[in-house]
Length: 133
Image (tube, rainbow, N blue to C red):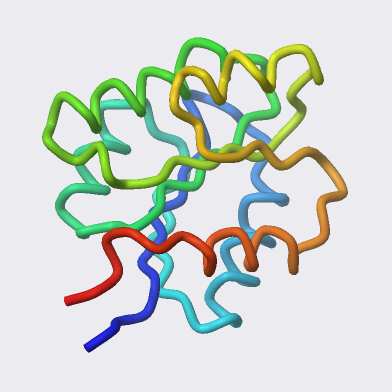
């Protein structure tokens, strides 16, 4: 039996920019996904929640420039916690030259400002691991 995708979403660190993450969370919910919205969190809290919620995907939002340190830390902690199969995606203002290093650090995809919601939804729906029970 296949269950709906479960997405844990959070804003990295003390990022005060909330509007985009709320819009994405609502779009994912409206697309039939189960969304757990955490608000502002540090990597440790995000990972703990993702494991507890049996998430398929962690969606991170960053508009404050902390993504090069905190996003890879989420991936590292998920792997250390035996949950490296949870995909991590990132949305926000990420300079183009930082996308490749983020992907090398384990971020599955990076979505910049203005990305159509349908593109984010389609990417998450295309993730095939960890969704069968």
